[in-house]
Image (tube, rainbow, N blue to C red; front, side):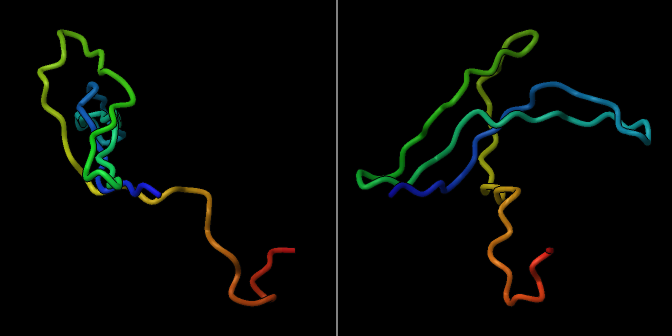
Length: 80
C-alpha cells in the first residue's frame, strides 16, 4: 500500500485575519507518495491563480486526518 510522504501546496491568495494582519491562503495541490516503484508526485489539481502560477510549490509534512480519534482506551471513555 502507498504511503503519503509529503503534501504539495501553493499560495492561492491572501486574506486579512481578525487582528488586521494580511496572511497567505494555501491550497494543497498534490502529494509525494512512496510506492513500490519509488517516490512519485501526484498532482490532484492545477493551481489557477490570478496573474498566473509561477511554478513554485511548498513541500510539507502531511497533516493528520481530522475526525478519526481512534478507539477509547476503556468503557469509561465512551460518550454514551
